[in-house]
Length: 280
Image (spheres, rainbow, N blue to C red):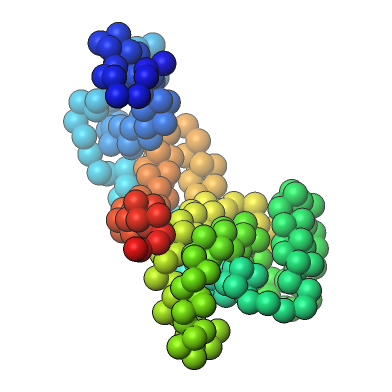
């Protein structure tokens, strides 16, 4: 362990870089292997005892064949609708709920906070039956709204926004009250500018959770035309179980939107973290 103010020795730096390289291989390695497999043509032997990481003749034919075999773009559009509803619901609902619990005084606030926190200890499998009964009673089975509704407001996201609003100095709220600001004005002009980093976290992870969800859409949806991408790709696995090139191509198609969302929002996320969510 290095002491503050002392530069790490050469051996310590070597160990750090080796550990970072190991973590990089464990996290990025499977993704790169899937990408490589998706670009391999029929002449590349992926079953050899010493498989080649780089394809001999990279091709995009696997992606085209996936699109020709299953309506992958329809499935992707369905997933985008579900993820959009979930993101909008959490961005608005979790923000309002977190602000109310953190900054507004009302009777039963502690009870409401306790109920929110208590839901975090329940596994998703415990509530999935009640969720299905609720969605069916609303007539939303076999609809994209029925898929998105249970994830429209996540309790963890509410608590994350609650923590972010609690970190805002109370002096800012007091100054806004002196100026005659109401609760809505305090939320818009005082609260939101100081919690953009946490809001970006909520948006990113809500999108990933909604986009990658498999079990709940599989339960709710019956019409193949309404399948989300993760559910629709099971047809690809069953049809081409002997050709992992196409399975890898379908996996990459499902993965790329997640990368795009994170790349678009990472600037706001890291900027919010660096600023500590508070401006002096």
